[in-house]
Image (cartoon, rainbow, N blue to C red; front, side):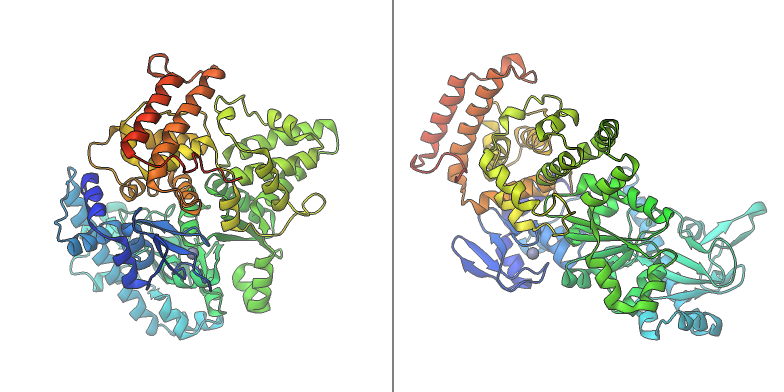
Length: 613
Ligand SMILES: [Zn+2]
């Protein structure tokens, strides 16, 4: 475990421009540096590196991060490795806090990695000696090159094949690694026997487990490694490591249900597919996928089981769908899995179907309408009730607005009435999210073009959505704090409890910055919140600040001004979340504002807010 203090120090010592420039040559553009984005394909540069913020952001695909994040995303490094590399360059020694038992665990993990790798090599070697296994793969249309690329192997048909690999078959680590099973009366035997073996890699390319498909008629047909210290099926996706570059090139990732599907698709040139491992899609899966691509297409069989699995994936995708992130659902003809489909009909047919994937919002409403047809007043009421928890699960503001609009169309209810029915309790913060009506309707009108009668298949366009959204007061406070995190210590800042993602992000941000003892920087704070639920809100606020040209100097004014307006509005509305004694009056907030302005000696001729309408 690396102490957070060190991360903060490290990020204040390295220069992200140097770090990125080593991999992606940058060009100076105004105060920033630019390049064509390494994370998606483009012809005009929208990848921006800010030397003042020590942060990169792509206005095309939304990729973002600190120097550490860049090494992780671009170089495929683990967090400790990325920190280690930067520290070496900066001449710093990485301190580590060992939790009790951690060094044991690390040694154990190293052992397990070595054992798993040995087993993978053994299985790969055994494939060459098994004509039956080779015949099976050939029959499925796989070439030797594809089998080699995926490291496919064969576990022989015997009780203890691995006994020939490891000097001690009794070694408990073999059991921990999930390779050996201790049965009754201590009889030990291999978990995988007479199976085609698919090694499962983690994000660094290390083998952490296996999937095995039975060669004969044995049961179960598919068998995976059990949960081990290395492998957790709820976190890992088969094929993700190998598909990373192809996913970037394709601008999409296809999620299927089996490893054979992934391999078969790759054999036909669709090398941006991954599979869940004998489990339904988890929120961790979805997060991992959206870190790789803005477009995630879930591919399922068209039968009832497939639609059920799709529904579970949808439920897990909704909370992590950010505006501009696009989840689609494609259904194969009844009875065909992706392997059958692509072998029978080929790449073009598969990609055509993928391009017609139903957007998550449309899939949700279609399924709900099928269960609760809004053809009567009762039906409409049931539909709204059924939609309520799903819409509440959404965290993307524009998507939420679009969904409400669609639901209003479907039920024939006026939109404000619908919002009330959807159970938006008169949220205390509602008034604070000062979104100019003009900008809002502009968003909605352009986003739902043609959606009144027909489901819109037009993909969301990330950059535009992010940029057109009018800034709310809470968002302005977030921006100001991100640009000048030290200001969190200078006054009583709101920690709203309204329950929107922006409220939650501001609260967390204020709590962290006000309570932190070391020097705060934009990059340090962003790194602290990396992979937290607040990451996307914070990153998009920071990107919007960049887009609006808000500098650290404006931030002080924006913060003081925003805080004053926030508390004024709170008082006007009898905001119940305000703790009595710590509320600064409007006058105090104003004084704070004046003080800041004097301290920073900034020209007041700059706009006070980001609003550019
Ligand atoms: Zn990009």
